[in-house]
Image (cartoon, rainbow, N blue to C red; front, side, top):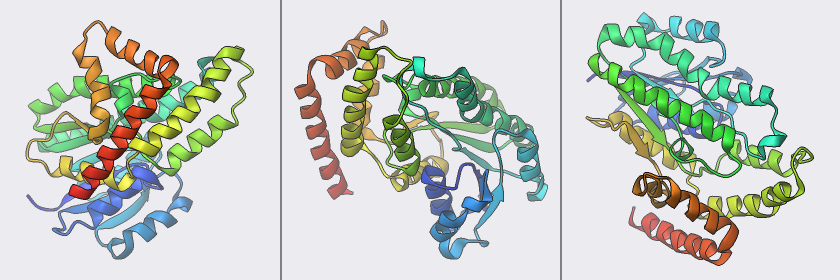
Length: 309
């Protein structure tokens, strides 16, 4: 197989930036990376991360996933419109009590997280079908497998992404097109930092007193502990993404964080859904010590795993 052209969205920071830079610096020079972002004024960090690969194995282009015209313009600018691998990464976050979120903000989130993916695939799929080859790689989340407290809308968008890809994958196979959902757990990025920073200052007047208290005094401190114990770096997620792209038979789903897998496994262990529900409820509201002890064990495992690698 020759050099593959990879289109990556949302490359101004975080996972998108790390994936684009890692693919561009591939020692075997297997990839030509088209790293895209909505605002080219934010290209500085990517240029720095790309280093010598800039304008050699990596080029930066403008693409707004919320605009069909912008997507078409970007794809039309490529030789033969050829994209061998799409890495759909552009996304936005949202946390907090449902009563405090506006419907307009929810629609905006879905416009990027779900419809952004739909627009890109709609544009690229006919070409991939014609060539009888391609790989659609979608940055999903463990929250596309399992809902999480105060992540109702974000999780809903990722569930939509998972359903979309799982449905599409069957048809895509007929045309020799691979589909993979990359599912990170907590990732320590600027994206996450901003989401939590906004959450700290959030106007909670739309929620009742008890809900606001749960969000401030239980959810936010717990989240910080989870990120500190289980959080991966964007580079670690990028490494896992490269493995998926280079795999002979890529999986439909790939969780990047082995330490988070016991949490998602609960869902498959009980078809009624009671087990994960009760477990998360008890961990959050009943057994603070158990929660902290579990994170302590996982932190220890993380260190050991890190030493082995």
